[in-house]
Image (cartoon, rainbow, N blue to C red; front, side, top):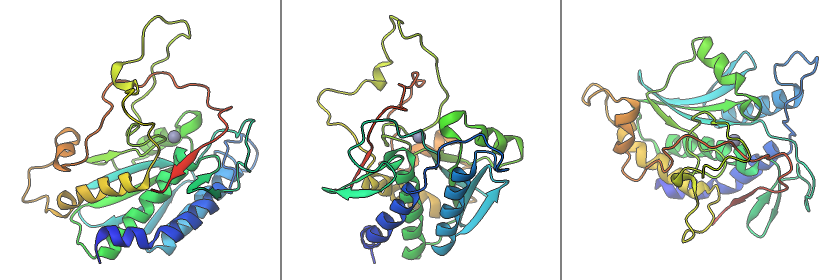
Length: 274
Ligand SMILES: [Zn+2]
């Protein structure tokens, strides 16, 4: 069966499992639960690790700071970095912010687009790769971050405690593929006369981008030839040289990120299935 057919076939399960993830209000809590980011975030991690395990992947929980699912073989590892924590829902919702309701081909709920939708989709894309039977000579690690929204302490923990550094990777976060990496933050005063970097401005000719699973799947499948190639026969890839090898995968943002808007009050997030 073709890769794209495997993906389409799994769509009902993907939507079901994404809804289950949305229904966990995984907002950071500083509490005495014993978990670094609070009990709801922990619950969401355990939900996702269990899901990944049921899909046939090796999973790892790194001290309740983050987790991952992995597939493939080889010394080199490619990372897909997502996160399961969300900001508070704010006001103005016309649906249950933690309901995961499907309406007119869209799923509504806090975290649907940022970043549970892309993260669960990456997991299902990995499943399609596994089910397609291709032999990978590199490993793919889908990382479940837990603290992106309030400081990324999880990634600092990963780096400080010997977390494996990938040879390449991308971050399907928010309005992916516009957002494809976590590159830090540049604080900008609200009254700054400086315009946003041109590469961050939305072209008036382009429609608004939504986090579309099809695009994420296409990008992962575009990487497949490189993932299957033996590292011994190819020059060792560096993060910068490896990117062009996936012919249709071209990061669009190269400038530092501007300070994000206050998102706590944004009422909605949608994830398209076209
Ligand atoms: Zn995000």
